[in-house]
Length: 117
Image (cartoon, rainbow, N blue to C red; front, side, top):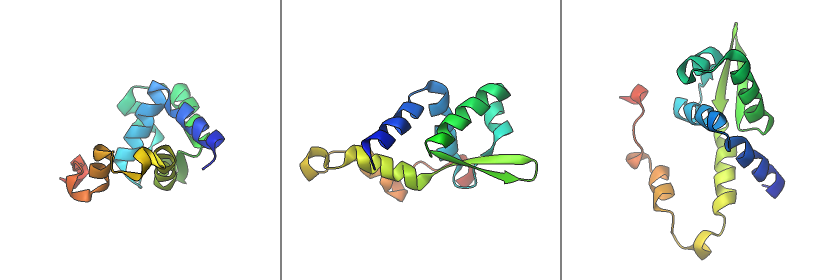
């Protein structure tokens, strides 16, 4: 990943509303969430939501897909993985120094979502 791409993606996530949208989509899984449900859950007006979704989509962090009358948005997990890899490349000179990241990568230690319960 190029520095310019990483900085643009991090800048997009640097806004409270966009970060909340992104976290909601990451938690939702690959099926995503329709735009109306995102707005309802986060209490966002349609125009505000549209602006922030466009910003996240512009840098590739999320993807939209049309399903009938609805647009469903989902996080791009491969891009998220690449961004995290870029951020932690050669971290601590190769030593395991990120216990939270290691724990999150282990399925047995991940908190189960409400849908999985």
